[in-house]
Image (cartoon, rainbow, N blue to C red):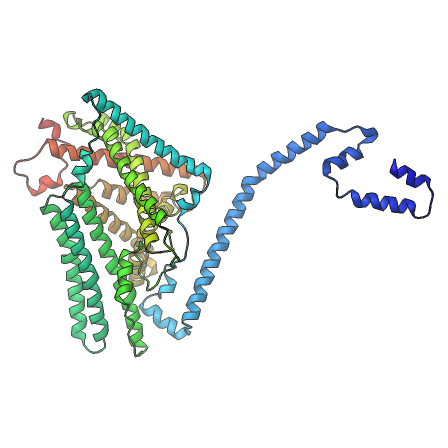
Length: 543
């Protein structure tokens, strides 16, 4: 061997030279080659090397989840701290306030930089759909839609002897669309001009005339209650709009009321602060800023929002196509799962057994409708408008599906509405009554949210049946305190999903039974109490 020849030469420095040469080559060799060389008498323990390698792989797989969880938590904390620090830097650079000025601001209301911070970020589902495993779940829902379509076509072909491609249900629920469009156009134009001009009129004459302040307040309240409050509701009821058309009118009514309130609520403290500081200029936003806010997918007013540099029109077309697909998905769910179940429900006696079976049979369509509403509106619809407006903050929801408490679920399911309720209902309640009344503030927020939800359903369905209000105020409040943020284990996520499934089954079952009962058991001369009393409880007596 080369090493033995070097030793036999006995020349000074030759052995050292050869050994150093070997030491230089040793680190360059792979690990397995060194193990082969170090084996005695040329024997190589391959089994032991393979076993050791498998042990290392198993240990790495065991450490991988903990490592990824730790990295994710540290990364999330780092990003949150970075956003908070950047917001503080922006606020400090834009206006360096002294302690005296901050005290003045606190007596009025917390300044905007202490409220919601808008920053450029993508929607969570857009990030998750880049993972092939999550995208497969999306493909599974598409496959289920194809199964619903095939089922409907085959059943119609067997019953009718031909393929029936009519969409009578969609045509019915979205009927009288010209009335809907005219109503929306009037609501939107009124919301553009009336609140803005009243605010400008008040802000310019606040210092000089107390009468102008009273007039602005009076006409503002009158517009909110009569113009946006009573007008759309009267049109929806008097024109007998179908359910989906009513939903468009009433949801736009609620949205515009919340938008107008946010605009006034954010700008009035700025005018009051400028008056106290004896500023020569009155901070009045431009009409273009207010108009952008009316279309932007947020309910919190700011003069400026983070914007993207370009518009991806392919992304916009994809999101609107997904909204249309979700609409047809909901159509087939009602046709295949709901209508056959509830069409003849009024012919059966109302009893406990039938109610329990109805609830459990309604869980599947109820959960699918829940997913479709979330995906179509909170993800696709809002992202489409955000992309067209280059609105960069796309956090319309968070990972509500991972919630282990109802408190976290309420915060993450619909971030857009939650922000409005938190800043303008919860925090303003504490600012007005004091921080000692947090429970009362939470109860007031639940009551407002439950009342608005029940108002929307009552007008859109044409009857008062406070199932959702009861679930909100009883079970919702109860679970909010029982399943609180201290519940972190996976079993609480299972409990949350189980209760959510049951709640969707109750909502679909009871509202659908009442809908068909009022169609099959009409009253000749109904009184006011007849509109409040559930007709599904006694409809079988009329058959």
